[in-house]
Length: 330
Image (tube, rainbow, N blue to C red):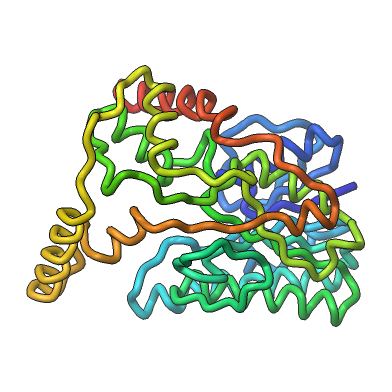
């Protein structure tokens, strides 16, 4: 089987390429910059982007499946960036789909986000939830999802959407990396008692799920949320990371009453200055609310069960963090 991976130089893309290599697949990589990791002779590189029609034509030639990961992910609010969200997440996906139609692919797998569903929730959500995204990122990811399914129905190839919560693992300098760094440097203090829960997914589970659904008829036109199958409290996460770093968690936390007063002060200061401050009510909510999703559908449909979770991968992630931070200090 030959698989095209767009965004193959990114955090998730690199892990997917390595997993596909282990499955003895042939891989086409569409990348904009030089790769910075080792690849086998089973990989063919196409340097370009999703608007380079000539490169796309070559990259999708004789491909069986497409893993589409390219996206604009950071949430900014000005008009120019709003145009970028639509251009990359929607029109870029459309351009790739047009190329796929001409190459007669069998399966198009689109990597989306739970932010296409909602920005916050009080209860555990699954794929039946009526999506109400509020950010530019979430809205354009949902538009791209619908476009993918529309193309598949019209042109006769399988389509599957994978919605991801926070993805963690070696290679990602996102929220978990920042938390590890803060705990390592003694700068992390919990807001509230840390009982709020979050759904997350290890990057290896994402790669495994993508490979597990390739050319599966039951997965056609389906949307799947992918998680570790375990929900983590912030307190659990704090303890795990501290233990992996051989640190002791601080014996206190900031009570919610005080945290809310600080957040309100941030709100007032933002209104006076016209600038968004690092800490306000919105930030407090994201740090202390629960954000939970169910991934039962993919288990029911194809029997997929995640092999990894925070408990059996945190040491690997911390080891990578130490190597990166050591290099940064040299």
